Image 1: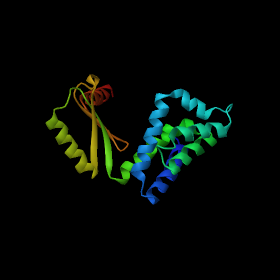
Image 2: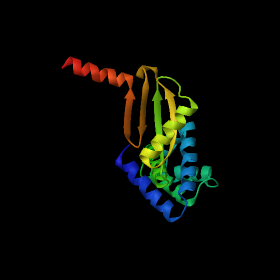
Image 3: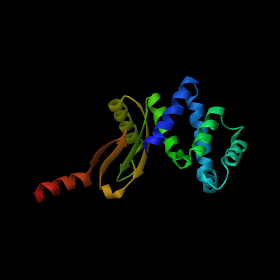
Image 4: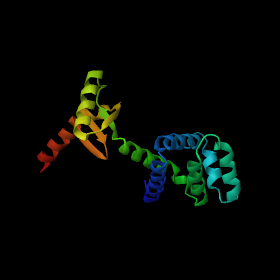
Length: 176
């Protein structure tokens, strides 16, 4: 992600807070983002310098006028005008991160060698919430290469409590 995406997302998020519409804007951004992902040719159309800007913006307006607010509409049109539509996905991710932070929500990516039981998931969730002071939503995946233990990524931090890491640490000590 780049600074441009963060700056644009921050501008829209500030406006959303003023308008008391941060949730609504988030849903509308998701709608546009998913449409662009499902139809990659539409993103190409919106960024094409060979098509007049007014035509691109008009087509976007017609496609989304009854689905998104005036401010989100203007936001996407501005990104088209500045030829930054390729950064739209990053802007949406940044916006979502700001929305989650404003609500004290954290997403945790949890990798384990075997599937965690519901009891283990609940205990881990409670521990992560206690550590972070936030409501935690976990996405659990299985990665047998870690041999055992867990790797948790949350709020830009990694907690690596895997056996694979411990074996590498032991190997490093032996190799010295």
